[in-house]
Image (cartoon, rainbow, N blue to C red; front, top):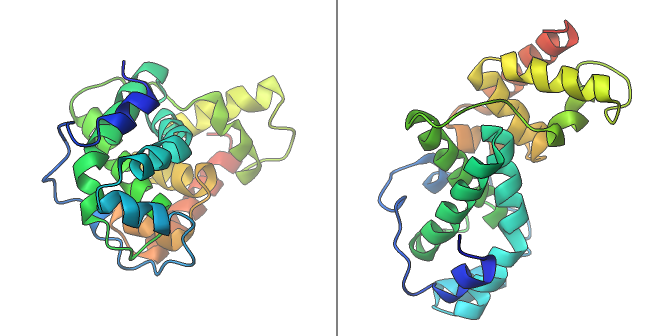
Length: 206
């Protein structure tokens, strides 16, 4: 498996299995960005600066991996997806238009990569213990407690995929409803409604 540093150094050579896919990560125009801390690095990377590209990968790799893990429930799948996304960015970064924050745009790419993984039949075995912190959505108690952690993992796993994805993006990744809506390709009100339904189901001990 390639390391983060190695990926950054292969910026001019790597292929892109996700290139050419018309996806929601290229249609985030509904979320106007605030000041983007990655703006200068992204501009440099698009201009061909390999060091800037490598710095972006180092800065966001943990987030890429965490989101992939949350969406797949599998460490090994998350590692594979994170590597695929990093390689895809070599070519895809040129399509970033700055209409959303780079981190939000990146979440869209990861989300679509995970969706593709599901479609290819990779195991979807549930969310990891990292999502235990969202226990507060539906019930009280200390999310560090083993009972709460197991309850959340089981309950979130049972949510319909649409609700689960909204929970992961908003509660797990702390995106706004508008940012999550752009990634999911739905209206902001739809995200709000899905979260409302998820809270009701989690609160009911599903």
